[in-house]
Figure 1 (cartoon, rainbow, N blue to C red):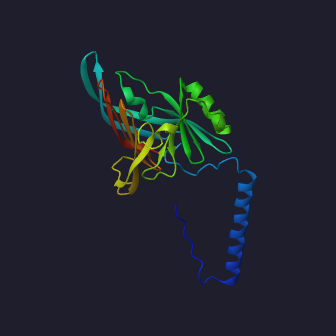
Figure 2: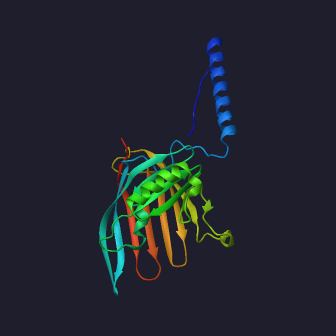
Length: 250
């Protein structure tokens, strides 16, 4: 985000007051950075809104293999921020029904719970068996993000720029497989209920490719996940979702 200021042709007293104010603010920021360098600051807004009550509604198609027959259906899927906790250097939110739940769809599949942990420039996804576990994890991780479990996955790393990779093992540093990769940055008008009509937004396409399957996540910062697809290369399993409604926290 960019900030603009215009102080030309102001009276000398006003200019002096402004300068003193800016100097005082700079000292405060410097003091905070020196006193708490080991604790990353909480960003004002991340790529995925984490305010309780925020909802995303998706529509799309799923395909799965039933015994030896491939079946398909249209689905609607709702993702919701159930609760959130903010600590001195992190924010953690309980999420019900991330689109990534649908990597292997089965009829009657219920949404699961996850914790999204935002700390510094990183966003982690931590799976939870049930909502009570997710609530406890969110509270704990918001206060002590360094205690995140081994199951935590680095889901996003900011800033999102084309070519950036994360999550790869040391032996895969030169490959674009088995890691998340930002493959595209496009400017789009999102035709989504709840998103102001005609507004142009950056949409980042991020892939995770392996030998058996591919995932594609599309993210518009400030709105969240706007599209998700999954394709398995063996036994048929596929998901295609796009965002149709966005209900921000009010």
